[in-house]
Length: 101
Image (tube, rainbow, N blue to C red):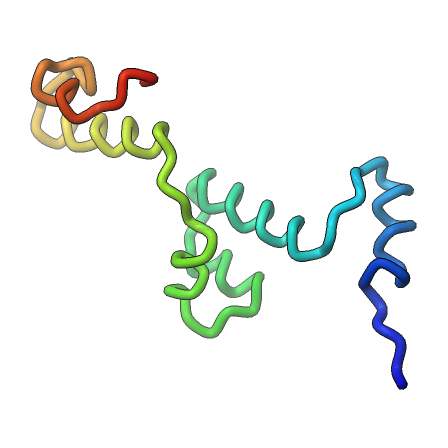
């Protein structure tokens, strides 16, 4: 039987220790990479390619999460398109925006 190269008993734990990183499984780091790349605005097609996904929909379904900052930025972009300068602080937008913004 062929030994797995990455798991708990493979090369992965020593690499993490050497890098000074906490013990995590490969899939945790993969998920973190994809989520942070998408949150940073990296093109989803590129992230899908790096992850080896055939379809970008798989990447977006699995790794893109709705975050408060994303809602705020989307509202600000829409305000800019409509020529408004007050952003998410307008009475109309405040009705939809969570208080934590």
